[in-house]
Image (cartoon, rainbow, N blue to C red):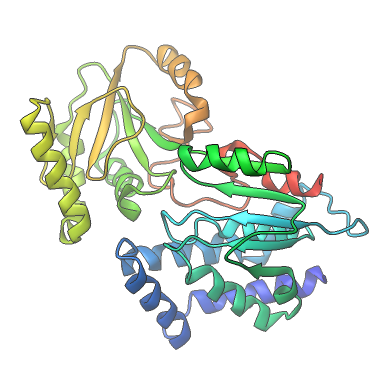
Length: 338
């Protein structure tokens, strides 16, 4: 595989993805949205623009690859990929890691997201035909050397059972969390709303839990989140919101409501669609210790630099780059070491 040709092909795909007047690109979006009601067209546009700039920019790819030594003389391996489908193109990063590591990918798509990734890979192979030999889509996986599988905690148990004898990466449920200090500006709180509401909160990088200081004033947050009232036009989101509201009322749960999302105090990192959990902290040291205990369940932390220099800025949870690996496991190094 010629790296320079693949870089040129990637740049062409990047241009195509960003060309809102391209008929085949727009047809891809329409079909994907029609097949999965959760794939709102505005969210698909967001995802496509993000993928275009983060995964197909030649300069970003070069910078990413500088951290690795790909042995082009070693035997290529066949890598089985079982992709999730909770948000658009969530498995594309794994596919590209296999491609750039010099191996071949045998991909089992999720039924929830079986349009976008094949269309993008097809476009990439049109620009560089070698790609079509290195990425194959299949309903069943067989004859592979290693596997990367993403799913729920329940499906991960099954993956461990069936694929444990292979070299593998098996991913389970994780969530994004946000740390607030009470000093956030209204603009920052609105950006946080993107982390909460993008893809209706279905992604493992979406913020599903807030950590706030004792005596935190929620009114500015609730006000900022009202700007995302468009989610209530989506029947599935609205139905979830109304079901949770009715359940909480019947069970006497103490909650806050701004007609867009429901908030309740809860220790769980995982919140239902249309809801958001929060928990109070007394000091940042106490909070760091708590988050350390749950690090195997946290995908990312959003918050101010004053809390942690590695925390993601508000509004960036669903903007991963090539070097940001799910569950903190370096997928590229795993593939290179096979």
